[in-house]
Amino acid sequence: MPLDLSVIIVNWNGGRFLEVCLESILRETSRLDGEVIVVDNASTDGSRDRVKRKFPEVKVISNRENLGFSKGNNIGIQQSSGEFICLVNSDVEIVEGSVGSMLEYMRNHPEVGMMGPKVLSPDLKIAPSCRSFPNLWSHFCRILALDRIFTGSMKNDRMRRVDVLFGIFWLLRRGALESAGLLDEDFFMYGEDMDLCKRFREGGWEIIYFPAASIVHYGGGSSESDPMRFYLEKQKSDFLYWKKYHNRLSQALYLLMMFAQQGFRFLCWSLLSGVPLGETGRDSLGFKMRRSLMAMRFCLGLLCRRSG
Image (spheres, rainbow, N blue to C red):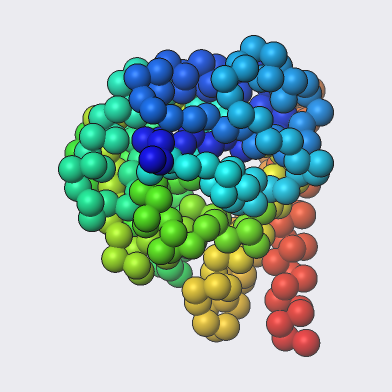
């Protein structure tokens, strides 16, 4: 017989966050017939060995290189046997009772293929955790920061059907995942959440935001070790999703808008660089300027390639 639940965590230098995450998961799964799997993407911070030593009940799969978030999760899914699958970021702490309440709801609602809990920031404020599928209008709103206004007005205390749950914590029905397909491994990191939710919705499965359950998302578990690289990965993944689901004209408009957004940010950071902000402030502005310049080069390279 299959297990009730398989919890899968992809780890790459998760450090202190991973241990907190595992402690909360093991507390939640102690009353379930389940398994916990850590897929380690060639971490160099010793976190893999600490998991083996401190949590012997956890199955550790060691990859020889960083295969990315999507492929790492797929490896874990293929070696799991739970009727339900929980994909969890390594920088998450689960609030007690959350997993059990989500499982109970999914068992009673077979039309639901995916669920996500309320996400709290480290100071326990409600953080964004879902969104609509992106289009040119929503991209324009993001450029003008209007999306923050709209997100802030959303009812985060009400259960509802949503388009996209951020890939921080997903509870998936195995049957739904088998029908929709595994995570698209072209998405190295980021963007896989929009893509998988798109395929779930196209397959007729409901995606539910479930605020009766909560997690704390500390953020930066892996990305803080190389923020410039992960910022570029985010830009690449966003465009990859756009390329997969939108026509060529829409793709070109998307790139132009992204280029304009990053150009405006670069100009703002440049103007601020003349203000006395102290050494820390100067370093932060310098990083943001380099980041925007890198993103502009990425957009320009794609636009030139498409016009050539």
